[in-house]
Every structure is written in structure tokens, then in C-alpha cells.
Amino acid sequence: MPAVARVLSGIQPSGEVHLGNYIGALRHWVADQDRNDCFYVVVDLHAITVPQEPEALRAATLDLAAILLAVGIDPERSTLFVQSHVHEHAELAWVLGCFAMFGELRRMTQFKDKAHRQREASVSVGLFSYPVLQAADILIYQADRVPVGEDQRQHLELTRDVAQRFNGRFGETFVVPEAAIPPVGARIMDLQNPTAKMSKSADSPQGTIRVTDPPDVLARKIKTAVTEIPDLEEAYAGKGYADLKRDLAEALVEFLRPLQERYRDLATDPGEIARLLEVGAAKAQAVASKTLAAVYERVGFLPRG
Ligand code: AQP
Image (cartoon, rainbow, N blue to C red; front, side, top):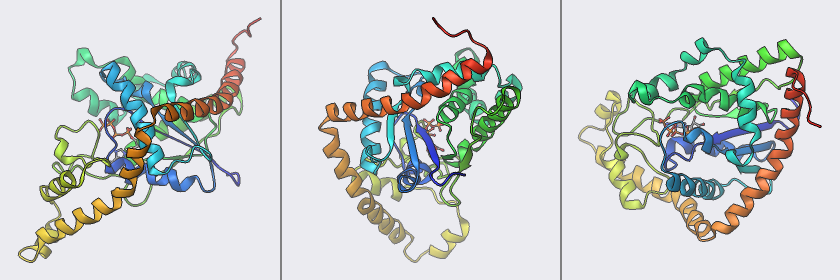
């Protein structure tokens, strides 16, 4: 791996950012900025693989960018942008879709889980080919490392397989990326349903701690959390298990306070956020367009003009 690694990761504007996103991914995005060349993307193309309201999606995209800045993504050091602003992602996804196999996509657990929640007639082809678009997001920047939560491990494996397949057929074109999955906190569970991961689209909002939740909401969610670790329950039985939850809620409120203050400040200036995203999109596109041109040449597309 080169001295300065290229890092890429994305997050969907499909709901509000939660503690799982933060612990599994975002805090590592922030740390990675110190020594790497980082690309962070709000993946709105991915978000429409399940139904979204247009105005809500637009607002959520801008809002998510504000959260990422509040969390500590520094647009001076990292390239922060919106996926649909760089059309090369969708174009590379088409090409890669011709090198990803139906059988391997059918095995993806995220697809199976999300498809299972919908009627078959309303499961989109986009939901099925989601991992191909994700492969394009990563490979188009020649990323070395992809910091993600555990739920993305299988998609990263697919990305590596597609890159290797393409390189094997056409010669070295893509860097084959490594998944960077943290040893602790890669799968934060839902507070109401401890067998499911915390997610933006959870059935019960009580089970998901949003990083923007006000103190009283945070306290209520921690208080009503289901505990499934019998040893812990026993250890605290009768001696202040409620105290533990109260202390935890207080710690969480203090932990999130600076982030929430920065978020409130940033949210007052959407024009500035849009400007930063434009700078990011231009930087991203300069890299993405080079990779796409090399890919088009390799697969045999006739150049224009
Ligand atoms: N529970 C989690 N624990 C640790 N990491 C997590 N990530 C997501 N959930 C957890 C990581 O956060 C990054 C952004 O992922 P995303 O935008 O797909 O977030 P989501 O909450 O999973 O959103 P969805 O798609 O709205 O929820 P689902 O899929 O449950 O329907 C990724 O690095 C992810 O690994």
C-alpha cells in the first residue's frame, strides 16, 4: 500500500444519521483524514433504490453533508461530494454490471433482507444492482481502503472480485481495495430489537439513536433499551441497573453536544454547504473522469470526434 493511501466511503441520505453510522464508519472517516487522501460521498443514487420523496431526499442530502462537516470531515483535507454530481459513477456502474454475475448479486444479504421487506413486484432492479454501483463508487477513485461497518463486508468482497475479473480480462485497470472494518463497533444493534442492526430505516424509531437527538429523547431511548446480555442483567440486577442507563444517557448527551452545536451552526448556512459540495464534486470528477476514460478505452468503445 502506498505511503498515502486513497480512502473512499459513502453514506446514504435515506434517513437521519445514527450512532451505528458514527461508531461503525464516520469516526473512522474523521481519523483517516490525518494521513490519507480521503473521498467521502453522500450516495443519493443508492438512496433511490428504495422509495424516496423528492423534496425530502434533496433536503436530506444537504442535511447529511452538514452532519458530516459537524462530525469533523474537513473539506480542506478531504473531498466531500454528492454522488449524483459526478455522473461518471453511473456510467462506470453500467460497465461493471456487465462484469458482475447475476448469481453473485443474488447472494447478497442486504438485497435479500431489503427485498424480503417489500412485495416482489415492488423490488427494483436498482436494489438488486446496488452493489455494482457501490463497486463503481470505490473503483473509480482507485481507492486502497474502504472504512465501513460489518454490514458492508460482502459488498466489498464483490467489489474486489469485480476489480480482479476486470483486471484479469483487460490488464491492470483498478486498484483492488481492502475493506477497513473496525474490530469494535462494526455492528451496533437496534435498542429495541437487539438481533437487528441499528439502521436509518428501522421499524421502531425508539431503537435508533440519532446523533441529532435532543437530550430528553436520548435519555428516553436509553431508558427503554432492551438488554439481552443475561450476564450483565444479572450483574446489575437489584443494584442500580437503572443507574447504569442514566449514567450512559448522560455520557451520550455530553459526547454528542459539540457535534450538535456545530450542526446547528452549519445548518444556518445551506449556501456555504452547497458551495463546499461543488468544490468537492469538481475535485472528485477530475479523478473519476480519468478512470472512466481508461475503462472505455480498455473495453473497446470508439472515442468521440
Ligand atoms: N448498525 C451499524 N453499526 C455499525 N455500522 C453501521 N453502518 C450502518 N449501520 C451500522 C455503517 O454506516 C455506513 C453508512 O451506511 P448506510 O448509509 O447504508 O446506513 P444504514 O443506517 O445502514 O442505512 P439504511 O440503508 O437506510 O438502513 P438499512 O440498510 O438497515 O435499511 C456504512 O459504512 C455502514 O456499514
